[in-house]
Length: 82
Image (cartoon, rainbow, N blue to C red; front, side):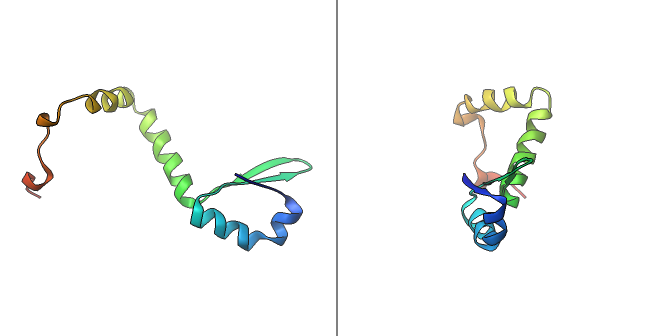
C-alpha cells in the first residue's frame, strides 16, 4: 500500500491513480481529520462480489465442500452443449 499525505496526493494525483489502476496498489491518504484509502475499480468490484457471495447462507460451505469432490463427478467443458 502506498502511503501519502493529502498535499502530496494532490500534487501527484495522476501518477498515484495510474499506479493504483495498473498495479492494484491501494493508496492510503492521511489528513489532519483522518485517513482515506483509494483502490482501483477492479479491486472494489472484487470486494463487492466477495461480500455478496459470503452473504448467501451456506454458499461458502458448499463451495469449500465442492473443492473436495473427485473430478469424475464433473462433466468436461467440451461435453457441455451450449
